[in-house]
Length: 422
Image (cartoon, helix red, strand yellow):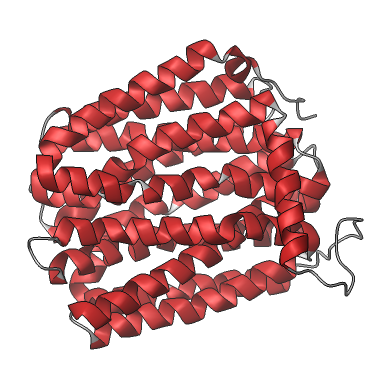
């Protein structure tokens, strides 16, 4: 029986494959990130361990910043399905490389240099995958079903995430750092299979290339067009700036250094750490379900604002006291707030963006994550000096204050609407 409403995109075979590939990748991402954090935390010298943990996010941020805008331009110029397959194949090689480095190295200068270099490269590849995957959803579903499709992407990504995060510590404990990281390569391989099974083929678009040269000058021109378009659209501009500020101040403490806070300040053992951080996944899952139900809700700006406020308040709760319950409740709100804001903002920008520059606008939008990861280093340096319990509460109130200022002064953000889904 054909499905309707929020589930209508599932009637499309190609979207089901796209959804499965996205869900598999999202399910294993926490395993990669947390394994990296704990490997560095275990082998780094005690006097600089927090700085080196922060360098993981910095390497990821630099990779995303270096490749992000370029990735959006590629998504607008080449077959998006073929591009996704190529990127996933390169991710397989990068994941195997990091796992091998973890197996043969126990830190040291050479080991850390190789580790951070590979982290930079794989993050750059992910920054190409992200906007391409977002841009292809309207291609597969059409503009009417795209909002529901994007929401279902988030639901699928969050369905298994709480379980995955719950078992992360146990997997690391059982397989070791290298074994756990190598296990995550299965996600990239399955994503490739899903893309190969799709019948979708790119439609001829004027912006796409047909054997023509596409060098640095052409890339720079395309990027400039995307930046100029975003700058001249007040809603898009301020939604992006809101996400940049919220994530730049809130993400380093709650996500990049979140496992460190849980294991060192709250005092949770590594084997049990996953049972705490999985509540971020629970919050994300609940918000993703709600966003799927609200696929036809036109007031996307109000959802963006609501999610940003929820994230900021939950940051305050997360660091307010050094107890397991505050970590759990904070993680639930952080996951729900971040998912609500990201999904609503993605749909809003998707519907405001013309097809021929959609990939570039999605890459500009996702630079908020690159900035957030880059901010991890200054946050870690301050924390090494002030300590985590002193710095994080200051950051939480600063995040809440700046989010409220933007919301109150830029009314076009929470008033922004999109067309309803039939």
